[in-house]
Image: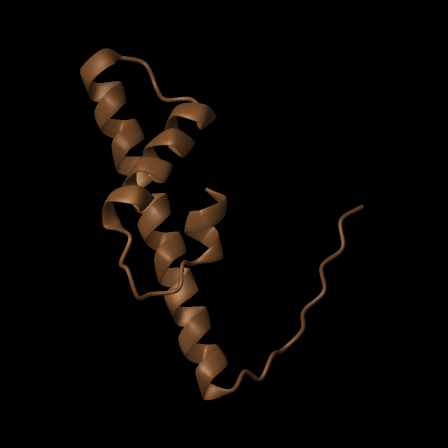
Length: 78
């Protein structure tokens, strides 16, 4: 049996900004990985595994890292 629980949060404006930024990073990482997988499949007929996708996201993080910005946990953990 599956159960679901709903809870409402009331973030402050600073928390809202951080949440929006983190979700933006998530969207970007997801769309990047999805596009990479689709392009690889079209080119080779084979998809990418989890390890290959994580490696590409890590390389992307190193290329795009801004010197004075905090890193998102999403990109750090990927």
